[in-house]
Image (cartoon, rainbow, N blue to C red; front, side, top):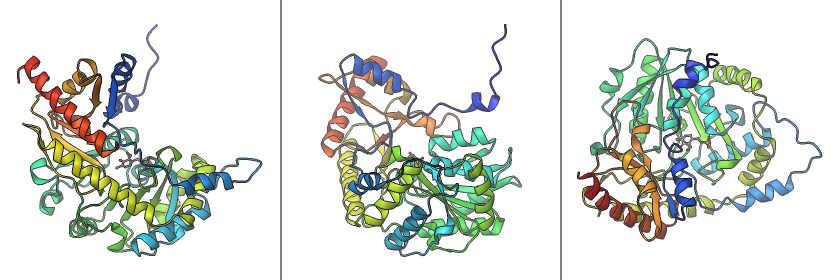
Length: 404
Ligand SMILES: Cc1ncc(COP(=O)(O)O)c(C=O)c1O
């Protein structure tokens, strides 16, 4: 009998480049190696105690479904948090609470596009955008950014030239995963102007909003034009509060039509998790600003230590990120994925090795990023330095074996 049919859309959804080599890392650990995980943005910073206090406060005999738009206490608390942290008034009704930013992104693709419509993204890009596009039938059109240019936005004319009659939105991630680039207010204002002129949405993924360094101030695109109906912000508590497993995100927009059509989609999936929303509301209402300051300072120091050690490795080219907690580095190898496998399968330095994410999976454009990796600064500074030492040793040994 022929195998039962699997949809093309499922088959075309790429495996996550971040998780693809996880089996090799498991095997390396089974073989007794210590593996430094720099492949995935899973923060090790402690979750605020206020979140756990919120879980203890949850008091109900039945864990009921939440409302589809999200817990009203959370929407209010998030709105207040934005007022406190950014000084902008975003009313609670502008929030649609989702199961992580991931679901907010899927909703955004579904709301703004029909199958075959296009969204412009900047390449390299957050790899899961590629997966979300595959499952919603959207074509992602990559606009190239380069390591030489600090992965900054290209001139607006170049972006404009890639718009077609099927373009429905420009999607920017700011601060950026995977590059750590922070777009200035002027750059984002330029994108907004382009979207206004072409009557398309500007979607800004602000999952890493607070993590900006070198004295930069966090801001949201909503500050630029709070009532602009073309703006959709995708937000998340995952990174900001080390709450990846709580699965709390939001789609935020002043556009009532987006919210009401989004609510119909949200109703079809019923609701985001009840207890996590409750605890997140409690946390946002009780947490002090200190948590964010301390966390950002910690990531900035890690960025400094990682970058300073990484840039001493001969043949490595890297851009110093100014936000988020990632760095893209170009290695003196032809295929970074083979090198990443070598690190896990064949190499160790005193029983220790490193797990890095090959960057090609972050590019929508084929054959780009083959010699690049992405590193996540989600370990202590000391461990990051040790990981860079291991990486340097592995590059020497790899060169001897492969001869490049
Ligand atoms: C840029 C970006 N957007 C969205 C997400 C998904 O976040 P969430 O955990 O809220 O689904 C991530 C997770 O790594 C991310 O890096």
